[in-house]
Length: 532
Ligand code: NAP
Image (cartoon, rainbow, N blue to C red; front, side, top):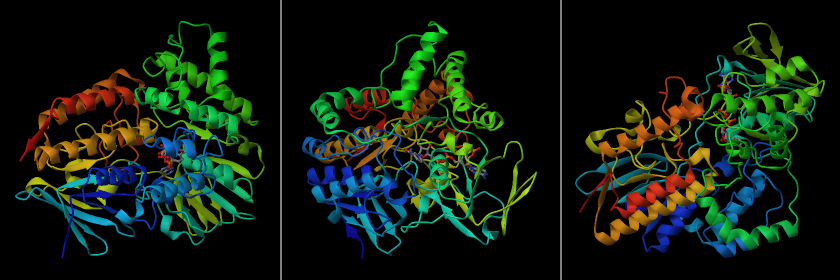
């Protein structure tokens, strides 16, 4: 027997919690469905040791309730996973959000009933829910990419995956450990494991750029200042390019002297968010030569931090422009290579052949280890939808439609899947921004849209092919005029075998995206077909 509600929200992370809260405030009967036993989304699942968010804590939090932002106190500049999860639980309790969710309930499928304009959503528990509107708040980075390391299942020792870490502590002391992957996750994990492991082998295929977090406790005076300025500052940041409103010089990197530029880069490196580099000079994300000034500066920092210059050279990215892969923050990452127990295994120099029962083999050597940690990344934007059967008009399965490349008008609705909103979906700024700002913007826009449709008596909303094509084409064009034009990364789907190369995040920036969304709404949801 199906449960009938007005709206279904899938996921109890930052996006799902806000969506449930908003829709309930609008008077809708809303049902939340969450795979995990708790709220928190990515901050529930990603509990590996050493995890800190790379956006400052005072920024990585909701702005929609002033009492909440005034009363909550962050302890560190970059919050740990545990503190962010505590915050999510606090929000759930404070706004009575938990009761609206069914936990331990994974969505397995959703079928659109074209005559009733309703979705029937089925779950792993065998339940089904019927609703006019579905909000997929499932996150862009929530499903690991398939493990594509040959022989992975043959290993006889302990294995861990960063995306599903045990809830009890893992002891690495006295053990020989291999970490596969040097993205944000691998860097943080390796820094932690290097402290106690007998030997740590870091398996690196593509190096990342990393900048020191300069983390530390937040003083009451600093928090008081942030809180006094919260309303105005958050409003300003909502209209910025990255949701952080970081300062820039407004100049070309090529018009200033080397000394001036180096001094400014050093100031960013020592004091500011690593994302400040992106807008430091107007042309660093557009002109290759300007972009190179950042790579040259950061490369010199790696050479300073790592004593063995041969190792330093291997740690310096040389195959892609700065900013086309996620820049990491670290708490002593490069310094681990100065320890005798840490070894960089350069897979570009000698590719990984396979995992073996006792360790791993590269083209050059065999290694014995006790533990293997996989930090090999996500099937970003699309992975979660591959794990469920979302069946829209004409029995089309979203998984198959997106096999040709994931596309969504205004980053939220894919043609042929009416009434199904995706929060921070393909071609929305999401992962290229302070994602909490992007989540808030998108959830507010989606829930305002549902309020409008309900008030006007519409029961169907559908992205038009023409509007979606134009939206995706514009994003691709922006890609062509930025350093992203030649990039191959998970931003483009290139990390997953067989996934088409598509510019997944919107590159226009958070403020322009907000303006575009607002214009579409003001124009009666231009580009969407509405029906009663
Ligand atoms: P990722 O950036 O995709 O990194 C995965 C790593 O695994 C890459 O170094 C990749 O090498 C390597 N890899 C994958 N398959 C491999 C294989 N078969 N053999 C050898 N190496 C392999 O994933 P992530 O580190 O989990 O980070 C994903 C995103 O999550 C980040 O970019 C960030 O947005 C977010 N995140 C944020 C934080 C934070 O806030 N501090 C922490 C963690 C994650 P190739 O690049 O050569 O494929």
